[in-house]
Length: 306
Image (tube, one colour):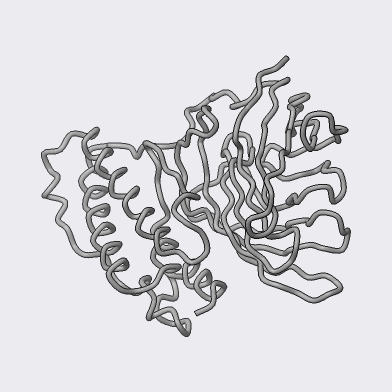
């Protein structure tokens, strides 16, 4: 089954389970293994939350451990993370891994059923009024690799100003390079990216990303003005992550789409991880047959303001 069909199965698992060709044989068609909520009747809220977190962490490890797109190094969940179960099921194959996912989902459902009547709230998410994770003058430093095993390059984004609805950066290609303007909106979409210097995205992200949200937008490739990938995505996990020694409220988004130029078209797919509060990129892993769209970019450090 193609990645695109797998993704469609994930999006419509709740409404069209078993109706789309090829979906019924995926793990999306395997029901959760029943577990009684009474097994957890005497557990305090903290214990329920801890066990739910452990179950979701294990589910993410299983799903991404067998994923042909990326590895489980992409979705790095810390305490209080939550995953979108339909996507974990529908995009992975049947077999022992799917059976384990079914057992984990049954246990999670029972924990949730035990917690809800008592008002226990799920963990994860930024607290109201949380401050932005970076301040003016600080420089986000990314390591980027193009293609398969390409040399590491440095990309720096120095936050210049916080304006209403947008963040202004000075982008550079390492110490000594000429900085260029880079603006993003509050969701993380580029609105002032210097044309075609690095891969960017527009109309893709939105504020307050939640589990299961379906997104669509464009990836704009470097160097050539006519190279654009039209992509769709789904939020498959949310929760706190520690990246480069800083805490973020992260959303993990699986992406797929197609990039076309004068030489033809090719598929593009992968994973993006962003901070839900600021839209800042934490990690990007893309695969494609088109140069410029096979990219691994990750935040490695944040330099303090001078």
